[in-house]
Image (cartoon, rainbow, N blue to C red):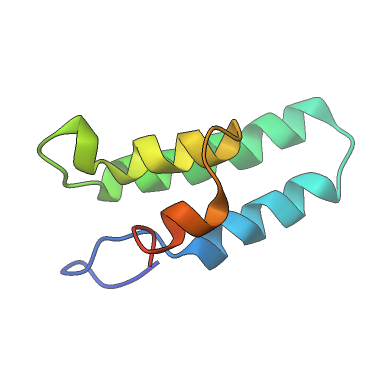
Length: 76
């Protein structure tokens, strides 16, 4: 993640989380990895509207509702 002033979520952090998830078959470990990542994103999200929320964009990427290319500009 970045400094306290710049609270955007780097796409590399999401990719790293997905790689850790892919490396395990344990459901509880997968749940823990994703939960910890989403908690970090939620704590650093300073958006005042849901439209600008980094958490929403990350969740959309996780459930494959949008492509990575369309969200990369928002998650830098």
